[in-house]
Length: 356
Image 1 (cartoon, rainbow, N blue to C red):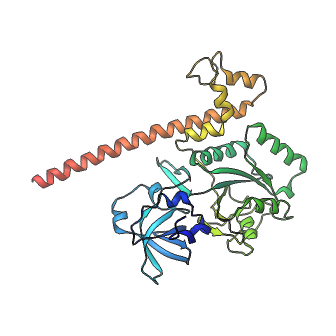
Image 2 (cartoon, helix red, strand yellow):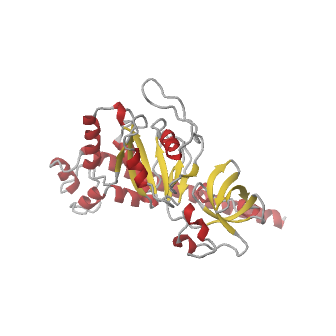
Image 3 (spheres, one colour):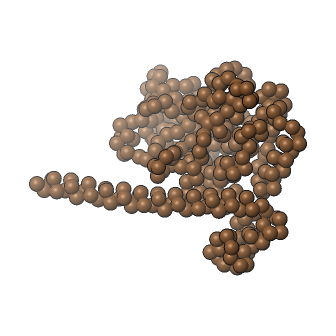
């Protein structure tokens, strides 16, 4: 690793980024720890400081996914001894976690960048949902990170129910590591800590109230993240309002996230193939190359369902996510077409104004 940037390795820097660090000789490098409106909280080997985007960066009107997000590495200008920087560019992302923008907007929302492992958190009390878990797995795999499944609140369910949930996960062909724990009894917390390696970045995602912030508070050893009181049912009320990169005492870096009610799929064909590898392999044996796996004769996927090799629910979720991904791609392509047409229209108007 280049000595110039060697001090950043505790923040997740590696030779992969070193080889792609196309910054100006006068620029320094830092990592985005938080996004705060139109400013950023950055961190480097000397500590944390604030920064903003350069005027030239803003002038380019880049789409939201190309703006800095938590976990990004950026090239910036910061005067010696200064406590405020100006960001000029983002380094290439090694991995990313994104979702379809909420509402009717056609586009992506970046959640985090350069994550080594995404910890998908579900409560095994009320929140356990295989369809949602598979949805998260698709986007994790599509973004190039490794997934890990964390089942919380084990103190609120019987061991037999927890065992059935874990069997259901494995029966769906999910091979990601599974950790179970209770924030109350602390059973399983040590198992999770052993998975968090120094210099690696972990992003915790899940619905509101599954115990993410409470858990990270315990990992930090202090109440840095606010958490809501627990209701009578044992479900927490989530109060995390922004994503933030935090370094643990053991050297691992974690990103907490506000709870997400929806996690829309955005053009994740590769992620779907990876997450549903068993179905993808079976589909290669279907009689028809464009088999929809809904009723054709000679469908290897439906035959596997009939024989009990895979569940009907697993196939239905696969088909739903694939349809959602394809619809997003078509909508996104249509938006790009309209944007190009509008750009050409503006050029014609500007030319007309200049000529007159």
